[in-house]
Image (cartoon, rainbow, N blue to C red; front, side, top):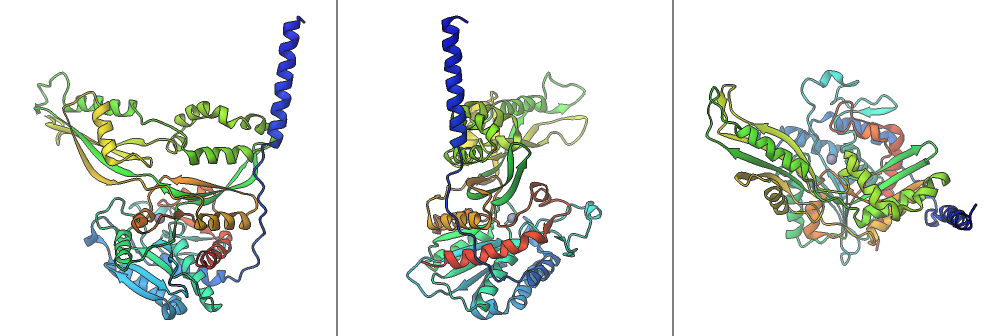
Length: 490
Ligand SMILES: [Zn+2]
């Protein structure tokens, strides 16, 4: 070997050795966590109550005339009957039509109250799929392994657990320092609605002069991650600190129309096809946000040693990772505003040329991208400037809540104490929740559901065979008891 070759080989050897040392040291930052002491919870009672809650068909609908409000009344009556100490101790207010506010007075009126959120409503079962369910969607069947039914994961499980934890704390004689609000909206599942129940609850509190210390809603989860030889027996606890925006925007092209026997070179639909291609070919810019970088770093530190030889260079790998993320839709949606072309409309008959052809595009906007930005984007990337752009529905992306707040610390700490193998990370919720409606009266808004369920089960949410494993219930109750106790303190 020539001298230069020897030097190169030597340099490579040194670099590889340095990388090996770096990979060995590239471990999660060790934080001393004491496991939680044993907690008194009543899982049997919770199971019975959740089962009954699922039997009540609190289905929301964009058209409020099509909502069966009797079911919501039944749900309220059920809560009153099932949780007697809550009925006696907490002040209940109904914000019309059926939003529920429970107010638990604390001993320190000088401190801002805390709020635990939930929505009473569920989505309907798609007609024709009822027979695909192992157990009917509104019977709340408890087969000893799961409780089945619409709302079992989204989110009667969460709402009933909040009530159950509160009832148990009352039984134990606990009194909070801060006031505690339990706030249950009636139409979360109706996205971008003018008549938003959570917003009405927020306005009710705002009118009373309430400013909340923190809000805890659904949205985040503790997901098992176990990939042989890559990452062993870990849980990814994602605490939602923000959520994407939502917009349905119609883009239309007009034309003369006429008889289809004498078509022009391109009808309105042909010109609309170019509009669609322009939109799909000009995706929004992708980038790793500060929180996404934190998530990548945390995961990179928790993989096995051979994999860490690569992932310890996660910073240098980011440009490459960005390209990989862009190719995988479930990953791409985490790093950019998405453009989903969903509906098209042309002429009403096969032999009529359309006078107007339109496409509806569903955008999910990253924080910082407003609905006005979406409209500007459409006008910029579509080459045809003779288009109509109509915003049909929209909800702006939320603000991002801080990760150095007292409340975030309590949630993160509880995750680590309950599951020593958890990787706790802040993350952006892809769907919508009620939580962002509280921004006018709260800066610390978090989304986390403490029920361990694997991704395949979570996919049943809004779908067929929605069900919750019995095995995750105890931890859920323990979490809420601890959260209420700690967060309501000074
Ligand atoms: Zn939900």
